[in-house]
Image (cartoon, rainbow, N blue to C red; front, side):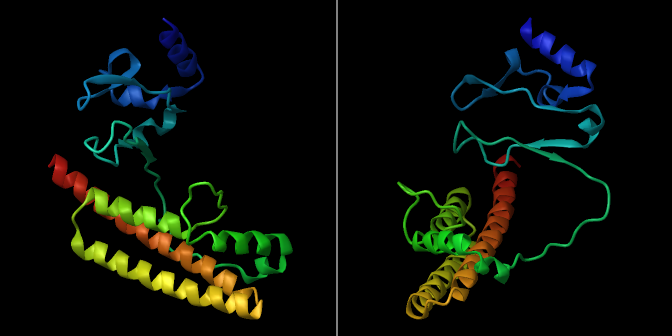
Length: 205
């Protein structure tokens, strides 16, 4: 009863529950996981009625790995595609004392796990997690070897820049470290995404 009232009110103001619009046969507003023979609740996913034709729902991780697999909603947008670009660290940020202190602390934590620490920036641990994720979802040895090599070189470069910073006190190496971390994470996430699509295609035909 309550579910019907909510959907009626939402529809009255031009909002559509996109998940149930795409999958009208779900039982009791739940999503069925065949692996565990369970029905799990899914929250309302409201989008404007005009966007419904452009909505595409994907499950980016095979459910064989977890019953908490992510559900991804993408919207197809017509128009000119923006060319990808590599982010660069803005040097003027190092003129901010508070930012410089936070960055130095974050870099200090790059060689530690995330357990027991709160890091405000991309860390080496995050990079390792991306690599581990890639190992889990596919057997693409060539790509994994490339990521592993990049990660090893990155760790060596960061060690050298860290030593330069500690020796000279110059803040510029901090910016270089941050840029390198961000670049690696961008590359790794892109590779993992492609490998994930390959694994999905192989698993589901």
